[in-house]
Amino acid sequence: MSQTLIEIKNVIPSMDFLVFSTPINWNIKKDQHWAVIGPNGAGKTLLTDILSGKHAIKSGEIICKDELGNPQSIRKCIKFVAFRDIYSLTDIQNGYYQQRWNIGLEEEVATVKDFLDKEPEQDWIHYLISVFGIEDLIEKKINLLSSGELRKFLIVRSLSAKPRILVLDNPFIGLDANSRNVLREVLKRLAQMENLQIILVVSDIADISPVITHVLPIKDKTLLPALYYSDFLSDRGLHKKLFKSKIEPRYLSDIQGKKEKISFKNALSFKNVTIKYGTRTILKNLSWQVKRGEKWALSGPNGSGKSTLLSLVVADNPQAYANDITLFDRKRGTGESIWDIKKHTGYISPEMHLYYQKNVSCLDIVGSGFFDTIGLYKKCNKEQEIIALKWMKIFGIEKIKDTSFLNISTGEQRLILLARVFVKDPELLILDEPLHGLDMENKRQVKKIIERFCTPDKALIYVTHYQEEIPDVVNQYLTLEKL
Image (cartoon, rainbow, N blue to C red; front, side, top):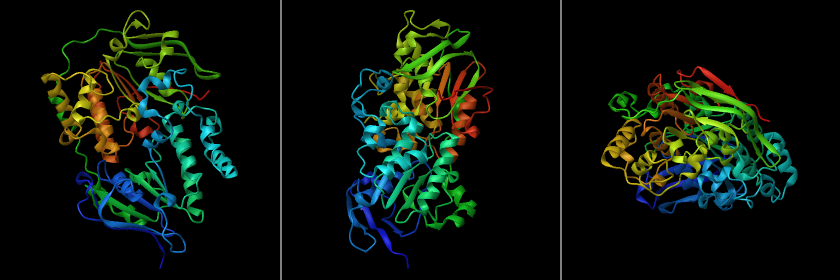
């Protein structure tokens, strides 16, 4: 019989809102590689947080043993990689969203090299750098890494300690096609390594690597019976049971558009735009025009400048004023305010999600979309509150309207931020990885909402690394290359 490395026995968390439907029981044995899978809000990340000791427990116990059967610290045994882990790298929580683009204000931010040079086994670090192909990231500051680059760096950094168990929370999110292939190959190599086991936390069946031996389905804070990998893949009934979206695109007909429409010919126009940070050129002589009603897909590998380009459009990047940029037929720098620009755009990105960690109600987060603020600094009037609640109903999240944004899952947070995008009925939708973190059924439903919302007069810029996620209304494409 395989040795049990970690055993969760009848665990009940201390905080009531963390409690599962039944006490938590889960055994992880030697040579097992697990996938924890379920829809948004199921309790996947909560389960791994309990496993890691991040939450106090009221009863039960978590037992961790080394190869000889001796008690071992959980923190020494397990390493986690999740999108939120960027908080541990720099004082990002005390910064502000636009700070990423204001180079010079954060001169003391560490580089990738600063972090990796601290690791004791440099031969192993150099091997990991080579395998993941992140040599070009070494001299970059942490706050300048793209979402995909951050994930690769976080995985390398976690592997540097050679943990006994590596937990990867939605590791494929934000990675371009080449990086996803690299990660799949790395997972194969890791699974062959002695004394290393993998736990993948995923919301999509397609993200379960073939190296996985066991699958733990979870829904509504309930652990379903564990299955062998092959048995789970063939159980179509279980797949349907797990993934049932609460999103209701049909309610879109209940939403009335804003009364005042802006008149414009071109949503944006770039002429020979160039963006540099120090000696590094991100965009060079880029010319691009998005006319009223056009639907564009913006693509390119991690680090090619997609997020930088969008930061110019939404007035978050001060270099916009040193370039020839026109928005809604008005040239940038001719007296308009940031709020004039943002008023007609709806924007979401992984970077915004990263910084948007506010201890306020979900309804207030959605309502902040009327004012283009990170947090709600103005109170919604009654009409605005009604619209915000209608959009929450469309996205199936009205039941968590009074819950703190910090007490919901990452996937639910993404739905809240998506509802925030639509409340003001924007003329230009800028959606940077909008399905980032959503489960497989919610992805399909949100895609339908985008398609129905984007009427002929709406302009759309859509960023994704997945061809199947591009809305059917998209008919024009811009691909950036990494310089």
